Image (tube, rainbow, N blue to C red; front, side, top):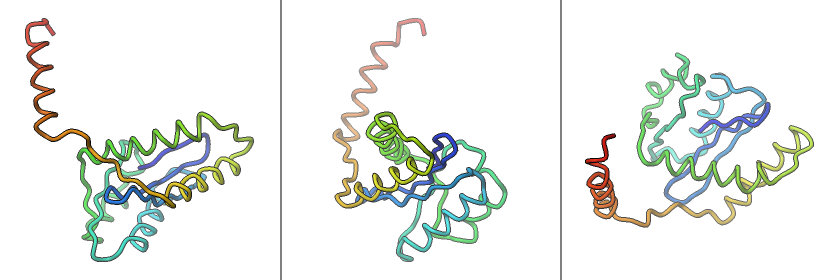
Length: 153
């Protein structure tokens, strides 16, 4: 995930199994900084684990050097799935609990607050837990489709 606030860019990796986050702040949001973050993830995540990359639509992830990176690091798999919802929820918590509520008088203070927030979050991490089964979600979708089927959409 890449996220920018003013001139601070946060690259974050969310562990969906345990809720921990690896985060790195940069002044710029370019492919060079994102590649450094990928290297950081590669060093931090145990070698036997796969890493599924879910990137937003930012151009940083579309640079040739970044597109080629997973090919040289086979355990990194570009993917898309409902995991992106979990990443977005974490990002929303960060925005709601820190960014929108805070008064950050400098980029340095904002960066320090984000690092502290991530550190505190990692002290007692909580993975997001789906509260509905696949069957419940599909039934809800079917009810919605039945409701709107004749609505002229």
